[in-house]
Length: 303
Image (cartoon, rainbow, N blue to C red; front, side, top):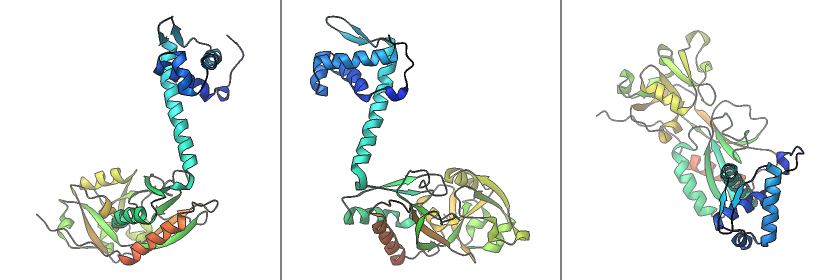
């Protein structure tokens, strides 16, 4: 075997495809047509792979072909790498036929289903995929989406953005909390309780209250952690109305919060090379928020 140090960058996918095809078809002869290669080319590719890795990958007899122990390990990893490469090519060649829309918690709240349905009706040539990502930009800064819905306080200067609407704030409570019997809660009552705040993607900050009148706080990591803490009755939460639409959970009730400024809802996207469907998505979101302005949810009846 060649003892020169090999770089992973020198590994070629065509060599891995040959190994997989040989195993799947059972022979070098049948692997050729599967790959569009001659039997000799298949043999050369396998030999090149074995030379590169420095191990024998197949046991070969006149009648059978079986992977060696090293071949079993390489084959499993090869299938993963080839699947990832195929997905990469599919997404790249799909180009603008796929629109990823990110969000940290609640997408468009109660408008989410309408947005998906109308998008499919109006733009069937562009597949819409919602991506939930626990980051302040809903996955945009991480490259997970083409544009994102954001509600958390965020410096919008690095991004192109559009204000699509506002949402009333509500209070999330355990269903057996004494306040759950009430029709609404006032903002100035919150400091009497312990407040759950998601420091990473939440919309609630202590500056909603005067510095000397702020509630005690526990910090959570994401929406599931936040809801779990509230369900124990140890704390309550303040959140946009969209949360109630997207996260209806046993043990949690929502009540309107009075005297609190609404939460602005923005769509953000990269300034450079935006997705061609960006402005269509913004227009549709604006339409939905204008058609069905958010109003405080009615309290649920007690059972």
